[in-house]
Image (cartoon, rainbow over all chains, first blue to last red; front, top):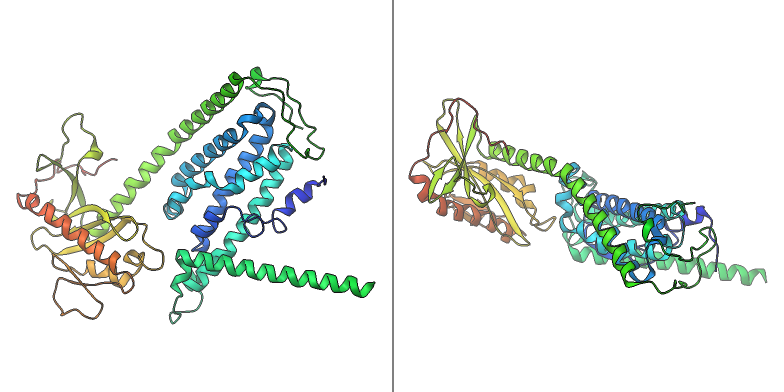
Length: 211
Length: 249
């Protein structure tokens, strides 16, 4: 069993164990709402809020939650925070709320959040759970904004609503449609896999050269 | 650090608490047999607390949300009825327009029109909102028209989930939207872009969003069909000519 430092708790979720790109969790929102950068940001923000609150609460209350009903209890906590986020977003960011629609409610079933509770918050103290949630949340944001940026630039020709290529750009509409989500994710994963493999080969060559 | 007890402490049973700073054990060391009562109690208490929290936040946010919706609607009415000073809301009660609802009736259950008046209190246009299926989901449209000439004075999409980049052009593509403000005659006819014969009731549909554009045109035509007989009976005067009779909610 390895020990992790608080810094590692925070950092690993951002890239090395990025929830979307490495762990392949939370793909539903990653595919569904990333057709523009603004939507990706709003979705990440809501998920971030829900995950941080749930992580702290569950890690604080973990000794009162019997093992047998822990999943139900986690879902209950997550669902409560999602409902709160839903109502608050509708009250204070009605435009984004309208865009995200049903996907806010679906944060409840985002397995990334439940996964963090089960594997981390239920076994660690609130401070480290918060760090872990922050790290994972930032990782999720990076993945979503990456996809949102890719799709918005190609599909609409703008970034965060700012037009990039002028009026003559012919938007690649498929990129903002659901199919574009799958394509984008596929290409991002392909690129990451290729980089990873090259690194590995280089490392192997280096060790061979040294011996 | 956080071993402080909270309000659920009274159902505390002796569970082995893991040392929080040591690495997590490889497998969950299942605690001793826990009574069914405790399982139910834990979830019940947690559920009750969650419910309470949601109710409190809802009490706070509901007025803000309702106010925002009312404002949006008000803005939309003024947008689709250009040049209107104020408007009255009339409900459809027993096939007649009425400014008042029957006592005890729920406002949301009644269809309504918004009648725009100019500075002298004369009727200048009527705004109607209606929702019907578009390509993805229901499109909510509000439009204004002149009940005498039948010409449209404006159209606004209140709510839609049409495909981003394609169907959402029904409110993002100003070339399409502006046609409804240019006073087309009704019933309108959707035509392919450039294929029109110059008739005053033609609307150029959006290439790539034919279903969504058609839906908008159809919604307006249907609404007019439904309301025309009622509006033709005559529109009642403002219930209170002195006070601005805007709906508070």
